[in-house]
Length: 57
Image 1 (cartoon, rainbow, N blue to C red):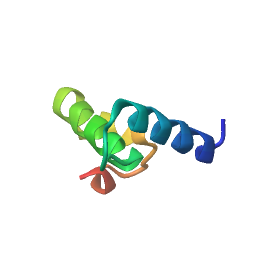
Image 2: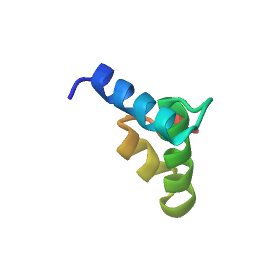
Image 3: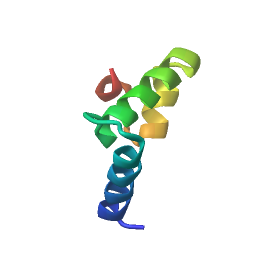
Image 4: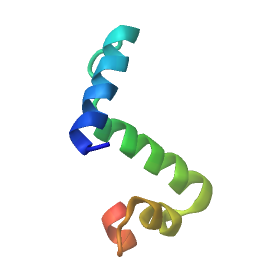
């Protein structure tokens, strides 16, 4: 799937669920926070594809 297809499907699911105001980046940030809380900033940076944990912080 392309990035645009994922975003389109994401919007369609949210629309059908009656959820508004949620963007894909919000989900990425929420997951990053959960990973950081449980596994640390180094793990979060690695899973997000960052080479420097300072970017994650």
